[in-house]
Each structure stands twice: as C-alpha cells, then as structure tokens.
Length: 229
Image (cartoon, rainbow, N blue to C red; front, side):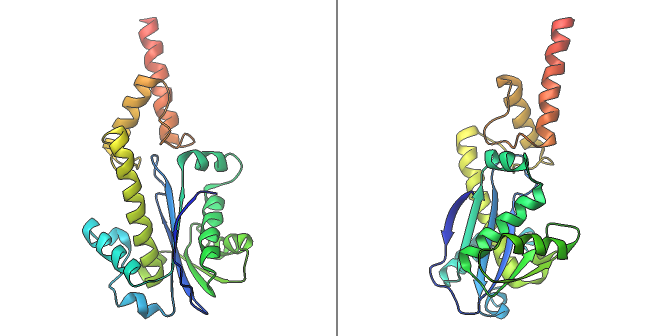
C-alpha cells in the first residue's frame, strides 16, 4: 500500500519512534505518513523540534534536513489520492490511517511507538494500529502528540516537508493548486476550473471527498441551467 519514499538504514535496539501524518484532510495530493526513531526523547528535543504547524516552512526544511543528517531512523509512506479513494470504498479514513501508521512502524520495528491518535477515543485508535502490526511493539496513542512528544513532532516535520515537496511537483504539472486543502480558496478555484472544463476531477483529487462531489454537482446544475434557459 502506498509508496515508501525513504527508510533509515540504522535501527536502534529498544527504539522509540513517533508517528504522524500530513495531508489527512486534503482534497488534492497525497497523504504522507512518517515515523522517526530515537533512543531517547531528548535526542530529538535538543534539535528544537515542534509541531510542524507551529513552524515556518524554512524552519521545517531546516529541521527535516537536520533530522536526516543526524542519522535518525526514518520511514515515510506516501499514499496517492486514487489509493485513498479505493481504500475508502471499504474502510473508514481512521482505519486507513491506522493501517498506514502500522506500516511505517513495521518499517522501523521499534520497541515503543507513540502515535498521534486519529480517533476521538485515543485508546481505541491504539488498538486499531496494533491489530495491523507485524512485529511486537507497544503502541502509545495520544491526542496532539505532535505538540507534546519530540519524536512525534519530528515525524510531523518529516511528513509535512515531504508532502509539501510532492505538492510542489504537482503544481509544476497542473499550475497553481494551492495547499490542497478544502479551506484553501486557490485549491477550490483550481478544482472548479478543472471540473468545469473537463467534466471530471483531476487525477490528483480525492474523488471521495465531499468538496469534489459538490463541485461536480455544481457543474451539472450549471449545464442543466444553460440547456433549459
């Protein structure tokens, strides 16, 4: 499932890892999940890692490069819009997230994994992740873990930087697409323009998203109005 972009070569004994993602709610572009391993929390906290949303793009890039340069074990998984749609035809988004979190945890094979919980009930989400693991690991689910746990903060930085890179590549192909989120006016205007011209969403859109459904319906209503009047 998905495309594994990178995985650290050196794995620690009794390793701790943090897991987070970027692009879960986006309507355009991939979902990127990352895991970052360390021996002790302070190994990453001394770098000044924080929740990626609290950092400027330049600072995120700087920290991502530092995390990689220091040799911390890293696993990154990118899931395309088409695969997200396919998976959502038979599972919930939370189930897809749990499966994806388990995938990067298995790549690193840590002793303990702290995950940013994607369910309102954190313990339930931890069980969902554990059910998919192929190796023994204690899963610690926490809400807002990217704000409180250095390894999860590091994972959020790696995931965000990688997703931004992939979105930039898409923009070179499609033109200005914004951040890819439904709250972004540029993103919605791009989607509307594409659907209005082509009669269908672009391949980089998540067709199962309500934003896409609404724009397709808008186009159909506009064409019907033109035909009737």
